[in-house]
Length: 206
Length: 206
DNA sequence: TCTTTACAGTGACTGCGGTCACCACTAACC
DNA sequence: GGTTAGTGGTGACCGCAGTCACTGTAAAGA
Image 1 (cartoon, chains in turn brown, yellow, orange, cyan):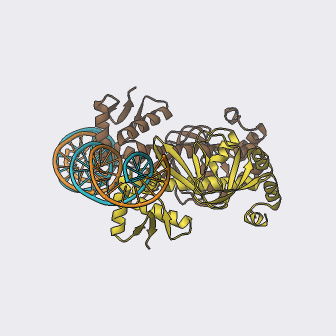
Image 2 (tube, rainbow over the protein chains, first blue to last red; image 1 turned 45 degrees about the vertical axis):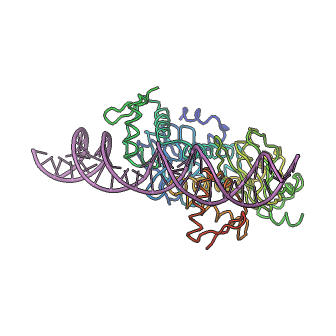
């Protein structure tokens, strides 16, 4: 418990104690879907360890919105919780993760009492908004090869590893394109010496 | 002044009085640039009448982020003001507009004291985030013809008019494409009886 | 073991839209 | 008047990426 307290130390100790007292802490294995579209939100997650992926789905295409890294929360859940409206997005753990689950009934109370709790979420909103802007600028300006390369690079950095295990189909989903396109471009990136593919794992060079 | 009070009546009367007391109200003519990228924000606008366009610029391409309609504010300004960081976006009046300009030094104070003031901005953030999601879904799923048509429709609805005056070049900017593409598609939409063009004005049919 | 399922590779085709080049028209300004 | 800047219209070209069809391979399940 002490380590969690330290991690949350950017908040007032009094609030940290409250959060730890009223919330539950859970380990969630990799690949678990923790939030579905249309689902009502009963607990607000703050990630302590691991990595959670938040994405939306248009038609059959899914699009990655953002990753929740340690010490971050999910503004989509926050708002859905605050307004008691169903979620517009999906969330899934990409790594084994440790999360604090704050029961939503405490949100309005703490928001009223602790100004820095508000600020936490303003910061998160702003972060997510910036990320969406980056996504849009990629969609507008970049060709698929650059989008794919940057995406792979970001993914490897996030899990602090040298290579990642992921299928072309999955990558196609995350970038909103088709599997064949990914295969084609991966081949090109491989020929250019920018990536390596070995038994289902992808490694970024440079 | 009475009318402004009424417009702001979704906030507590006490807060409304404070806002009106400390802020200035200004009429801003159509086409005025009220916020530049990299500029520090000294006053936070809330639009009472008219229409303000907020957009970003990547390379030479500009992209419309959102319109601030009456009773809405600008989360980009809000955050830049709160954190005293320079703006990442541009804002320009699209119509003659009446805005309240709240001096930024009052923001932290009122946010602390009035919970519903926080909620106002959470609402705005969520609204803008949803709009960006829509923008992304358009970018991902729709062809230019649909994007252009929807864009024109939205624009005419926003200014509650039957037609709008705008150049093809400007439309190309707003959609992040080239002038020739707009001309080409406008021709097609005209042939399909979906729009009419007359002396620089564009009218949506149906 | 055989079968099924998921995944990867590839060639062919197609269309959207970005770009270039050029012309035409209007309005503003000298 | 002539010149310039802003606008719109068009034809030609071409590359990216979406799609279809089919093959090959590896893993999983019966």
